[in-house]
Amino acid sequence: MTHRTFSLAAAAAMLSMALTSPAGAQRDSVIADARAAGLVGEQADGYLGLVPGAQISADLRGRVEQNNMRRRAAYTERAAAANASVAEIAAAVACEVFQDAQKLRVGERYRDDAGQWRQHTATQAVVVPGVCGRS
Amino acid sequence: MRRILTSTLGAAVLAAACIPVQIQAPDRPIEINLNVNIRQEVIVRLERDAEELLQQNQDLF
Image (cartoon, rainbow over all chains, first blue to last red; front, top):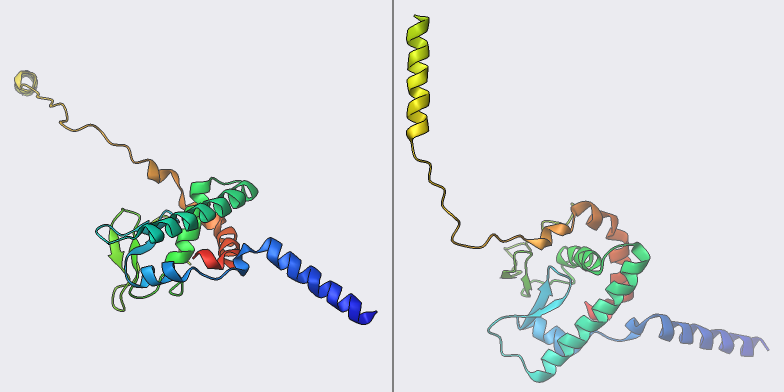
């Protein structure tokens, strides 16, 4: 009986994890590699962008589009709950990403709020969008 | 004395009136940047939401 209760609880926990967090999924390694290689990067608008001049395969382009669609879905859902616009939530997330060295790592390229592509280097700190508060 | 002052002033006004003022139309259309619509205070208010969203979608970032 206790064993059965336990396994039921475990199954329920696993199910709820699977339902609530598509994030149980891993980070896309193809995108991670492309970020490290400077082919794609984070943008101040909260989405991934393709670095101009980079050789982008159709596969990579598709993955980036897929990623951005899922971001947009997450932004849209959160925007409704927070009584904000999708663009505002996206910009707020970009502020967090730009100030987190685990999310915008050294070596990666990114697009600032003026639309210019830059690189995060050991000596050059990330240019955080002007709309971000101090944190 | 006062008379001299008035006449000098009058001359100055006249002279100013005679200077042709040229107004040039801008050769480029006026651009309005809509990005400024996002305000800092809104971003600050949404900080907690942004953190939670990132926590729940770690695979996307």
